[in-house]
Image 1 (cartoon, protein in one colour):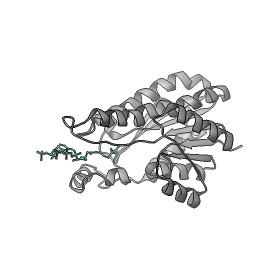
Image 2: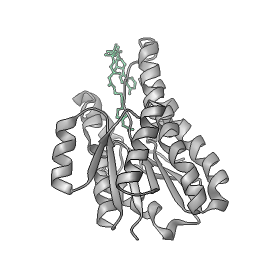
Image 3: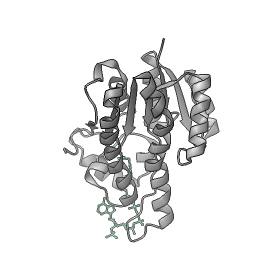
Image 4: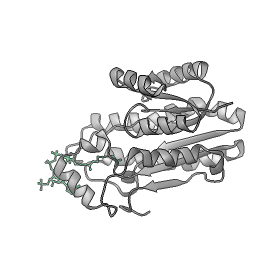
Length: 240
Ligand code: CAA
């Protein structure tokens, strides 16, 4: 029987590419989105992938949403914690609200997404937890104290979960995309974006599909011994 995958933020950007790649691999896929009903409906129409709306920053909403997915699509074997936001500002201008919004969505959102599926994975003795971190969690980034803190936090989450899940057949890994051609990166002022691209030895932004292929590999049975790892996909911009 086909396994079931949940992708948060799975109807746009990197998440949409992940949802599609997992569907192409034969998984049952459910994708969550936060607010853009129109984009989600269009995505479902085009791909046949079911979309569910909830706020990953809210534990009870996540738990209820996941229960609905499990009833309608299947018990979740693969969870991709991808949903994330930016609220960039130089630190001297960053407000407590910008700090909390990013922490709540990007970091607490990972807890809220993985915790409700963890017990089921332990019982079924199989699970794949894949967290989409960022190059900026590895190297830090001007104007992203909040975002970089969450993305560095993701790496601590997967290293800890890997140790807890290993004997139950669960792996937990992170992917650190570099700068990928998505709306999030396109929102960076053009001058800044050009300067970022000039720092990427490959000479271009990455494509969402290049991240999706890493996810498909980590979701597969072939990746069982890879646990607690970080895959960097950044066009040689930064080495750990
Ligand atoms: N390094 C060093 N200095 C920088 C800089 C950088 N990367 N970016 C901006 N600055 C400097 C500017 O040159 C300017 O300096 P001067 O005052 O001397 O001219 C100063 O910082 C900006 O000051 P402002 O008061 O104008 O800043 P602002 O309040 O208008 O904020 C900004 C502007 C939010 C920092 C904007 O420049 C920006 O969005 N920068 C991009 C940040 C970024 O790279 N975010 C990554 C988004 S993509 C992503 O997050 C996906 C992923 O995982 C990779």
